[in-house]
Length: 87
Image (cartoon, rainbow, N blue to C red):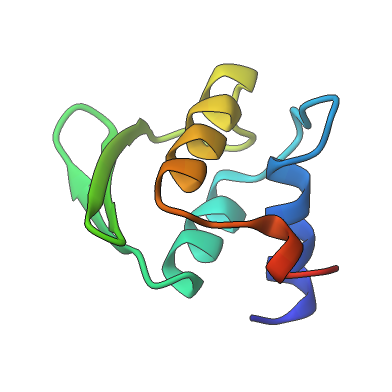
């Protein structure tokens, strides 16, 4: 995982929650973590990671706050610990 991916991952888990994360950067991190990302109907993407799956709304630019929280919850469910990927 490169430095940019680690910075985005840390921003997902940051407190207060970051609301300026680019959608494509978050998708790139999910793929880097081993997630399978596929486009779904209705402007959504599906992600499978570590035996878990989730669907997220496709944002054109920055992810809304609610989506960042959903991605964070999904990563925690998948057993991703941001401490393992220091920025």
